[in-house]
Amino acid sequence: MRKKIAAGNWKMNTNLTTGQQLASEVINMVNSEVNSDVQVILIPPYFHITGVKKLIGPAKNIFLGAQNVHHEDSGAYTGEISAEMLQSCGVTHVVVGHSERREYFGEDEALLAKKVRKVLDFGMTPIFCCGEKLEVREADKHFDLNKKQVEGALFGLSEEDIKKVVIAYEPVWAIGTGVTASDDQAQEMHAFIRKLIADKYNQATADSISILYGGSVKPGNAKALFSCPDVDGGLVGGASLKSRDFTDIAKSF
Ligand code: 13P
Image 1 (cartoon, rainbow, N blue to C red):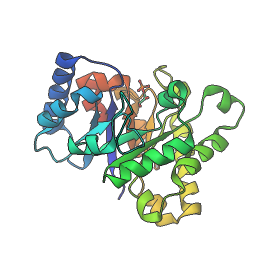
Image 2 (cartoon, rainbow, N blue to C red; image 1 turned 45 degrees about the horizontal axis):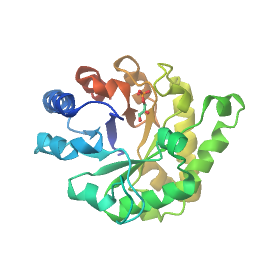
Image 3 (cartoon, protein in one colour; image 1 turned 90 degrees about the vertical axis):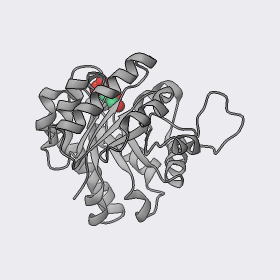
């Protein structure tokens, strides 16, 4: 059985007070309302990590994620954060290759492969993002592009390691736009990605990997998306900043 996952990527939002409040509300609601077989992952900005870890407390199905990581172990990289630092704070999941990092910080597959390796080396789970821009889909090159992204960053991994990765398909045209991929578009791409993994590794490995959808997931569309056979949950941006909405999404399996 693949894991069902609702992950909330807060991006560069909240301050110390509002972030703590959001995390407390979500944790309380999730503890009382969300089925324990759903993994809920809170992915706040770095400065919240230790505070949110404390708030999560003993909850077994609530995890702590980071939005990025540096690919080197340590050293003179002012402003960066290492996998060891994150792990030492109780982080279990790290987003790697979000389209905003690719777009604004020039992250490419070669770099992302190093980041994935580093996250795995520290015993954490990479949430590896892929997804095409609108012009790529309009040119009918979206399958090629997602294949290139997945192969380039992940296919150097052993079978044992790729099983530890979570993939998030986030079409760039659906992020923060209010335009969600249709259920058919999401299912089609998720099935395609799973087949890539089956062809490279084997079907059992492909079947064990959770593939999340991201891009304007809301309480109103989560249920239909999550009932697609190859959609195992969501990586949620804007709606994760509202405790009621995010909890309702986590209840949509
Ligand atoms: P939105 O849910 O705001 O579209 O963001 C999706 C996303 O980028 C999550 O990582």
